[in-house]
Length: 337
Image 1 (cartoon, rainbow, N blue to C red):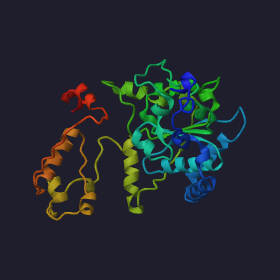
Image 2 (image 1 turned 90 degrees about the horizontal axis):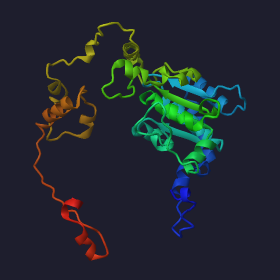
Image 3 (image 1 turned 135 degrees about the vertical axis):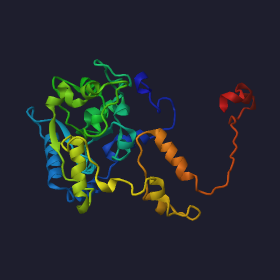
Image 4 (image 1 turned 180 degrees about the horizontal axis):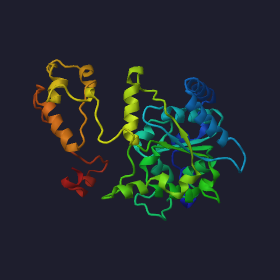
């Protein structure tokens, strides 16, 4: 905001801060430490992951107008997409360059070094249309770092409406998609797609990035090896993938171990526990999945019933903190409570 009016903290005689600089600038990264992290990650990669990283890095550091610049990392949960992102981030930082790391959700963004939501970085409008544009300030710090970046990583891309990608493309485009900025989208189309209010299946599918003209510019990199599943769980991982891919048949038959032994799943999971002496480790390995919030609230109530607890009432009061007692009279209680 200050830059928009030709001002800065120094001109206004305000204390200087380097928080934003530290958050964005590659100069605050220890190149040696980043290099060590990159090598440590790279040594643990499988063949598919190495191919994806080598392909993206080659595109980011090749100066040719013929190079491929748009990529999509496709892989089910557990195939190591985040590990690929982190390896790329550490590698690019080790070379003294800037990676822009965004995700479609705040939770996904927190899992990546320097991660932020795509809406925060690109200032994507909340109400999207086919002609939406990003509300960025041309001289802002964010725009400067986007332009200087060597790679843009966007995790959980299938969750975001295609109009958002089109808005970012309009921000960066100079004749070519995303202004020939190397960009890596990633995610799994078997998981959550864009949420369309009262939308049909057809509208939901049509709102995905892979149903829009930008998709033809994407080179798809695929991960298939589930790195999270144990050897005896690989069969279940394969079955789960086939269900999501629609190749398992209809109707879907659940494996027998997915059914509760008892008719009451609460009794099966928690019946052997003494809630007066229960410890965290005993509860952390047990969970019941439900389809709706209403079901989960009902289940929580049933699980909590046998827990012996004393009722405690906590009271609080809100007040105005000010050096001038007269300020307190300017705020009525209901305004501060």
